[in-house]
Image (cartoon, rainbow, N blue to C red; front, side):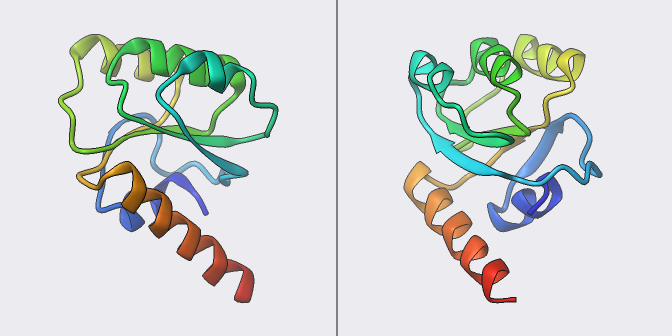
Length: 115
């Protein structure tokens, strides 16, 4: 599952970054506490958060996340968009709740496993 797939699954909009990247989601982390995200050691995480600030992007960059989804269609600041573009972190805005986003991604992973 790539960032382009994530955008479709979550009815989202790519706000920054490369939507054609072949980089796959390795794990999903749904968290608003960036200190907890920093403790995660999974590779290629997709961060789902309601934290609509550049702190989420900087944290994602530090842990090597493949992308960030801000749920509930929260407004994104120009600073957040600029930092995402500068650091090359794909940023998606989704109208879904965190719960619904996680359920849809889980279902997509299961479908992918089944072939």
